[in-house]
Length: 254
Image (cartoon, rainbow, N blue to C red; front, side, top):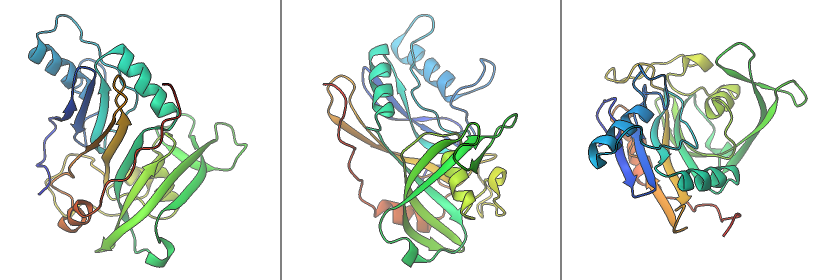
């Protein structure tokens, strides 16, 4: 059915070292103390549940953009934070997103997985990025794997594997191909959600499946974050029918 509209996170997975939360669109991952954020919610949760004194430890090895919903990892111990950060660095984490992109696409152009490889950079003095050519100051390679799951009503649903972690990467690379993320007016979206009951600024990008190796036991962990309730029913049906993929093989110790 999908989740209802709320700025309150949910717990998807928790043990002594790991905390994976469902982040609502519109809630920042981190923010100054006076502004509600995923981090502040998680600290309050740890204080109440475990009676912790002072400021509980939280490691944040990755962040989701404010308009993006879905699975977000937090570390409850410094050992977990260091080891998960290393997994992100070595690309051992499966970061799979669902994206609603505007436009009609040719299914013959998206048979199986395709690679999008670009050079991107942050625009100086602005909170946005752009595609550019190699050699431009600040240019860095950005890599995605994309797979078309289906399309309807001028929207295409893609499963996207994030290989690198550049600023606004999926949003930027999709927009550069004239397929902006639904509702992402920063990068050229011209459409609004058909369901008006959505968080302010929400875009059609969702951190769907997060797969990693337990930082202590090293067993594979795969967490799936249900789509928000305001996503179209046909997209939810396609997502539910899609089997999870494999977590990348470990490259680091042990």
